[in-house]
Amino acid sequence: MSERTLEPLQLLLQREQQHCEQAQAALRDADRTEQRARLQHEQLVTYRGEYEARWSRQFAQGASMDILQCYRSFMQRLDQALALQARQLQLAERQREQARQQLLDIERRAASVRKLIERRLAELAASGRRHEQKLTDEQAQRLRWHASRHGRLLPQ
Image 1: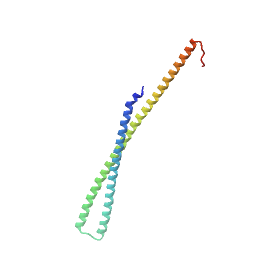
Image 2: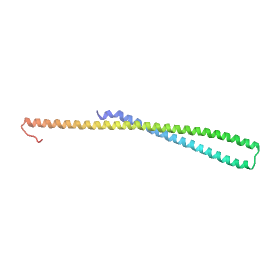
Image 3: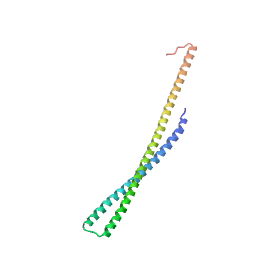
Image 4: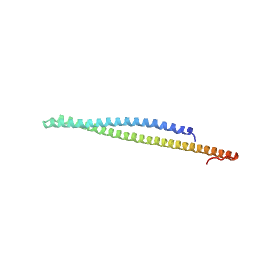
């Protein structure tokens, strides 16, 4: 095994890191979308409460049937808008969660590739050490053999 055998893994890691960056951007976008939907929902809830309080005071002083019908009609439309915005918020929350899960999956894959590269590098280093040891042992053997042929003693 050589350093060259790591090239495909390093390319794979680069691709996973790019996917990770894209997933992080998608999560940021989903966060912003959810925050906007939440803010709009909160604003509608606040407006509805203020509108209801204002007209409750007005009705305490008396109001015509036409005004009461307009109030009810507007409150129905406001409630519909609130329900629609609540669904938009739920959708944004689901999409944000999906984006978060996708990012976690990609990060997990990238971590697996990194770990595999680390293991391969460790294997390469161990193989190199074994090869060096083998060369050293062979050289020592040749020296002993050469010394024994020429009648010299080598230190042990």
